[in-house]
Length: 321
Image (cartoon, rainbow, N blue to C red; front, side, top):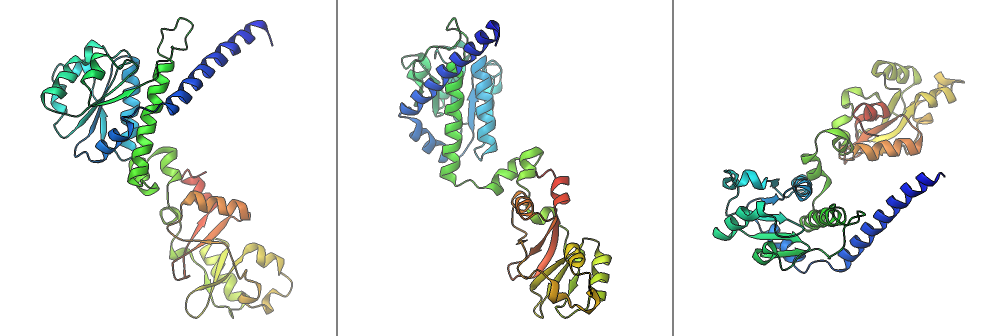
């Protein structure tokens, strides 16, 4: 490795180690007001309002977004805009979290005064416990006093990393307390990769009209006609109660080609096929098909009756991968 590349790698290594050490210290010295703040947010009737300026503002936006997407109504208010009318967005039912590493950011002064005037709960995130912000706050999330990891010790690096991690910790603690589940998560993430990963089988599968249904004593002429008519390469063998008794695939037909017309459907059906229910996550169903090396899987209801078919291609088309 060239000397310049070694220097570059060493710079990255120093920063990452410094920030890792700061996060480890934050975990050991979690602010005493962390749990009370979580409890206050859980009891909140309104929203959580985040604000900050500069790099702290960017972190505040991310925390607000994370909270909102995990079940805690939240949004970001720019402190300058707040001073010019957007204070009206903050109500007495809300709670404000203001971020300033120094705790003396002058742009936050109007927000601090507003929360004090109308008794709106205020949480501060800062590394300076004696600062104006922290002295005014009801909940004080004091960061460990760690030096910034940049060579001059000035650029927000370690402090913003700790603040971001603390915000994630808040969001996850709230999720745990609310027993936030995947269905709720999907409600807030209907699009993109996350939405696709949280699709359920019933949202992607082909319904009952796609099923080729035959009785165990059906001859192969009838079975092949049913399979050809539906075009999914599968036949469901069902008993007299309509429950799935086996599955016949194109591969089963080929493996039993010799004397096929003398064979009954129940003779060559896989008696214990892989199945899923409509409420199974499509990603889990896809994983099951991949593990079993099959291209399609039968969907059954709680009583064991077939209600649909899901194919690997259906999952891939929906973005489940």
